[in-house]
Length: 547
Image (tube, rainbow, N blue to C red; front, side, top):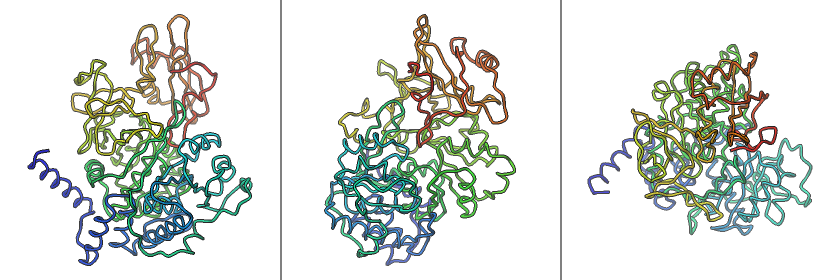
C-alpha cells in the first residue's frame, strides 16, 4: 500500500470508529490507561474487556440468568480465574476446551484463557460424547471447562484432563465417572486475586470447529487480529454503536456469536445472554433490556416469525435497529418476512469459519434483491473464478474466493483451503449480479449432476421455501441408474397448511428448468440441523446416497 493510500486507509478506519462511538471523549487519566493497555495487550478479546473496564467500569457488561455484571467485575473475574488456572499449571500455549452455553461462565473462561495466552478450543454443545472425545483427542487440550449438564457427555473426553464446572445448576446428568470434585469457576474466582495481570509471552488463540455438516468437524485455528481493521470492516456495513445493549442469541462457541462478543467488548456494549434459544423468551429479553441489536442464525428468525401475530405484538421492539444474521443460508422469502414484521433492520453476513466473512447484505440489498449475500465490506476482496482460474463476469457462476485480515491459518490437522493469489475458497460457488451483489448458488461439493445437467440445490430450496405452504426445505441428489442422480426434496409444511407434492413440482416447473424439478418430495415434521441452524443433509431419512 502506497503512503497516501495508507494514510487514507487509516483515516477511513478512524472515521468508522468515531461514528460507532469506539473513539470518543473520555477522562484524560482513563484515556492514558486505555492507550497503555492497548500497547501492552495488542488487539485481543482480553484487550476489549480491559479497556471497557477502564473507561466504563460501572456500566453493565453482561446480563444473564444470574443477573448483571459490570465491566469492572468481568475484568476482575477473568483476572482471578486466570491466576487460578496458572496456579494449576496452565501457561501460554496450552489448550483449554470450553463446552458451555451462553452465560457468564463462557465469558470468564474465554477472557481468562486470552489473558494467559492459552488456546481456547470451543466445543459445540450439540455434539455427542464420541464427537467431543474425538475432537479433544485430536486437539490435546490440558483442561476442559464445561457446564454441569454436560458432565456425563464430557466423561470420555475429559479423562486425564483438568476439569472445571462453569454453570453448576440444572444438571440432569449423573456425576462424572471419575468421582472427582471438580472446582466451580465461581469458587476459583472468589479465592484468587482480582488485580491486573501482565500480558502473556504469546497471544491467546482461538480454535473454532467447523459445522461438520458433511463429515467430522475440523478445528480452524486463528490468531487474534493484528489491527482494528477487522472491527472497522464489520462496522462499515453493520451500524453497531457503542454502549448499546446487544442480545446475542447465536451460540457463543460459533464464529458468529464469538464475533459479536468481540465487537461488544470493543464497543463496551451490554451483552444479554440466555442459555437456550426459545423465540418468546428471546424476544422478551430483547424487549425488556431495550436491546438495539439482536444476533441470530437464520433458523432462529424462522421460528420467531412463525409465532402468532398476537404473540409478537406483546413485545415492544421499536428500539431494535439491527437484526444481524449469519451461520447458514438466509432464504430471500424469510428476509422479506422479517423486514415486513420488524422493519428494514436486517443485516445478513455471508462467510465461513475459514474466511470469517466475505459479504454483508444490508436491508436495502435484501429489499432490492432478496436472497443476495450482499457486497464485500471494507478491506475485503471477493472474486468469482472459473475452473481455468480466470475471473468471471456478472451473472457467470464460478468458485468464490475471499481475502481479508481474518482468514484462518489452516486446520489443526494440517490441511487448508484452496488458495489463489492469496484469496481463499470457502467451498461455495456463486455469482455477482450487475449491481455487484453476490449470490451464493451452493456448495461446490453439493453440485448434483442429473442427466448431464449441473444443478445446485440452493436455487430449488429458495424457490420452494418461498411457497406459501412450505416452512423449510432441503434438496439432495440420490443415485439413479438412468440419470446418474435424481433430485429429491424434503419439505416441512408451514403450520396449518397442507402441502401437495404435485402442486410443489408444478411450482418448480413453472419457475425453473424442467431438469430442476425434484423427482420425489418427502414431507417431514422438521429437518435435522446443527446448533447453528445448518441442515445436516446426511441425517435426512431413508439412507439414500447424497451429494
